[in-house]
Length: 134
Image (tube, rainbow, N blue to C red; front, side):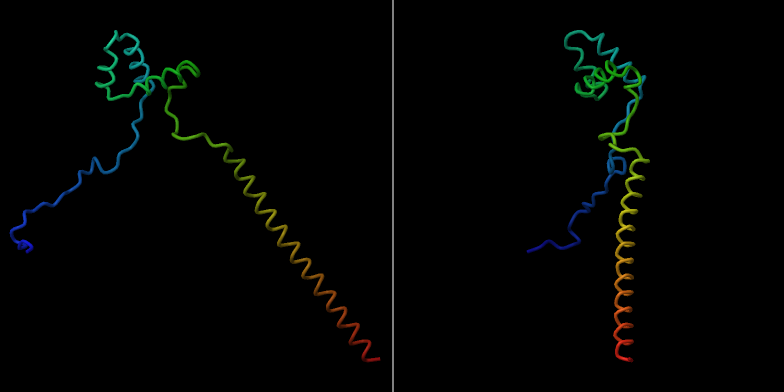
């Protein structure tokens, strides 16, 4: 038998707004350089302590080192996540306009063909009407 409503405890859960939407952490270039310098100074076994203190992963350090080696300090600056777009905004606009141009060319061809057909039909009607009048 179910319990009466009055005897149930108030177990309403309210979500914490800070935990509702998590976003990616963004690290400044000087922070990355400082952490890389600290990681290079670490002795055996101290790197894990540094990573736990800063709440980082070893893969982040590897990626930062790779970026620093290939692109220099500018490689450590924040970049948008995900792959880089294959086409620039201008190229995408050109492609869009070319598609629209092709679509309109097809419509124009269809319209001119319809007009030509109407002209032929009208001339045939005129010929048949002029032939029956004589």
